[in-house]
Image (tube, rainbow over all chains, first blue to last red; front, side, top):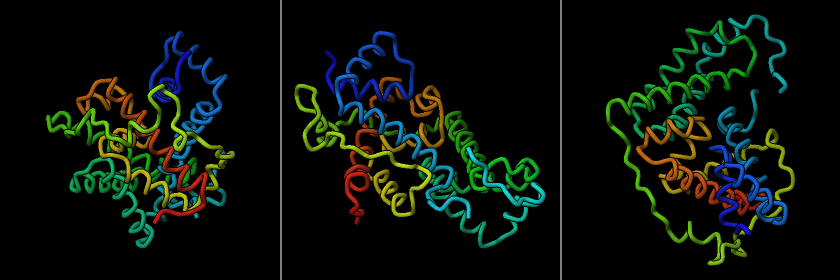
Length: 65
Length: 208
């Protein structure tokens, strides 16, 4: 069974490269049984959305007013 | 995505009007410069990128058809300029050297020896943050957390997530392997996540 450090590495890699079928399956299996890594994985997507938003508003945090 | 472009009379006139407002442009320029400096590290190159982006925005004012917010549009131009600058710099064989493979205690502390989350670093619940609604205080925390990334991690993270370069381009630019890149991104994300959680999502205390 894959460990959390490895699972977080694959969750991060998945945002930058395609995973092999094997990697993808082991990650999915780990996330299925691990709440912490599940959160981590979702939070990485949130961080990506935050980064996009930061560039769009360049951190002014006030939209286009 | 909802467009915030109501009340625009003529697309052409709008961009030109924005760019004619000296106070607005001054403030915009300052923010663009800050953004460019994060990516380029060379003040002169950053200055040039901002100058060219603003000139490009003015020249192509007609292309701004109200399809996206003005600021977003100008920053998209700036991002392209920065990517150009980085590619140009590479051709000049003047590659930025960043220390690689440096693992400090901070990087090592996220997992125990068995590969499980350390108790004090494990992800807490963030709720469902509405990214569109994050305000000034949050962005201040975000910038502070970015500033606290080691330079190599910060550089790679910003090239990937802000400038949206492909991994191949980043590796070629920095002269690092794909494996290096993935390691740096993983570390950067672990740190940034931890910092955001500690200073925002799990606590409402602000960073000093």
